[in-house]
Length: 423
Image (cartoon, rainbow, N blue to C red; front, side, top):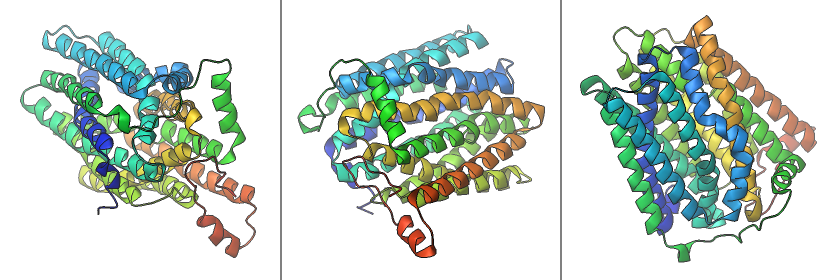
């Protein structure tokens, strides 16, 4: 068990993770509250998908340049400023809701503003992890980040559902605004002397092209990015599908949505703890978890009632995090420190920005048929993408027989330098 939580022995990372956990509880409370507010204000599946897309669309437009900023400036100070801005956005939503002045278009605008904060926050935060822990512990820290994220997803939606059904939606937004204080305090208390920052990248032309060229030149990273984009676009749309399933439940409503989200997060937490035990990312885990997620999502959609659906969300959530943790660690460990912020911005651009188109698309499919059909489509695309990626990896690595396949399955990524995991 100590091996699972070894990164928490580092004081700076411990402060960072604690602040993140408190903030993420608030963030996931707001996710449930915002989605339910959109439905309450008369929005349907498309409006719900649009609100989600607006929150992540800035990453598509500005994501690559955010990576340049992350490489150029001290990440701790950037995060303090960004988290403060996002806290102000949360407070504005809380105030408008409290005074009864909130309208659907205002929710959309605030979602967009939050997305502008997210576009800089995510690549900076991802790259900052490698400055707090030794290179050998980066996979563990990435997995524990996922565990922290999904612990917030367990507590946040359940608490939001309880508050919405008992005292109303306004306290949900105020508590989220207050939760940003914790992450800012944690960042302020971090000792800069204990960090392992890389040398700041000086201003120069072509820095975005350099990151794109690096990813394009390394087939292992390119395959990971493409696979992640496909699965995130078509499979990771639970904010839309679970909200619509909850709304369709006559006696459930916001409570059903919150509880289903919490169950999915519980499964994700289990997956994160499994991933934290692994020393190195493996291509077999990457492909296997992608295919498993797609199949599990289709089985989940076929469940005849809410109880069985919730049961299936546990292994589905675990498969999600096994995949995303492996993909994240592969990209981080396969990138030099001076390029890490920019390459992570490419990864996040695809994972978040391009995938933003999936939310309104899945919302449209859900309205044409039902939310479960949208889940089936997402699962099918994810499984096929995983199979295609695995076949491509084997073909490029020159595997010809079973003995070679066993060797290839043991292939891992060595930390600290770019390595093609296909070799």
